[in-house]
Length: 401
Image (cartoon, rainbow, N blue to C red; front, side, top):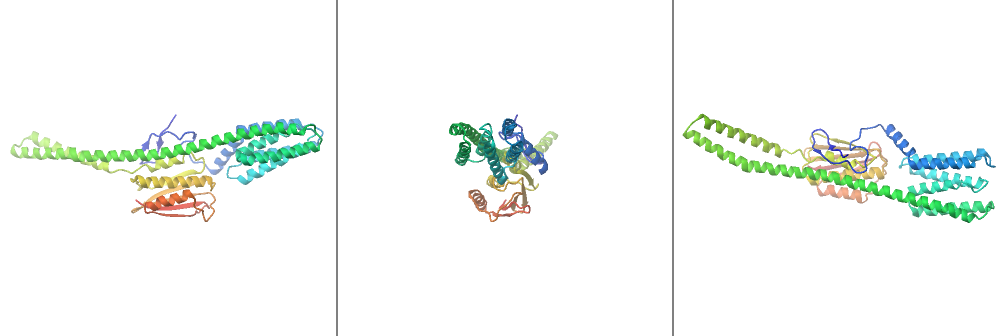
């Protein structure tokens, strides 16, 4: 069921749905990094593909147990393969070197089991699992040559040991590997497309939040003008006529009517003043909707109470700046948290963004950072990008408000 987005205290509320495919709420409760890492580890460990790989390993271990080979050697190789398998699949995405090393260990131990097995039994099945893992990590242009090299190695080992018709065996296992690679490839492509759709949906929700607020402000201003120009003008004329009648023929009824018209005119002026006193666009809700599809980094937003953004162009610049910082922190900085702070100092709006990732300075400004700088320059603002106190990227922007 869709749920409404709520901004901080004193801000507007919009009945916007949650971002598609995102299970956590827009503003999930904060957790310690240790709890977040443990939860992520358990989620990865209990993934259906990991369970399937473990069952496959168990079947291979049972088939190799009790053969002519030394039990300790097979047990050692099987334990090393399982450890590398779990290390690869449970490692966070930011640990690319660990994943690559684990895949290398899996390949080496699987080939060793094929070499030491007394018959071409189930040991090559581990290579099917390995190829499926490779396809979940890299493109088919990289995976297929690796699979070809692995199968050539298996053919050489079986041909050396004199197994009958080794080419047919290798081709049969190669067919399973190709099927596993294509399945993993399409699964990963579907996940990437889903993630892109989630981000586009979040972008649309954030833009819609600002657009709805801007439309409300324009309508509020139009109603205020109508009340002031039409109702206010008519009541002023009515009050002047009542005063004239009261001067010619004083009566309690005319005096009361004149007093009521004065009170009504004062109330209308108060309403007009309240309608014109807009609190600005709800940048809080827009930023939280924008950050919702990012499982990491988590957005920690702080907006001073004196910050009010009424200009849609300024609000859009703030939104796109935070969006680019979120994308870079997730893709390049491998950050766990992104701090966004908005404050107003006189006629300037100060935006500070800092993540806890790993910044490599000097930063090479690609299209994203260049677009960020161009947007800020177009509004007459200033932008500075450097290293933060926690080692991540820090972005400081000052914009006229």
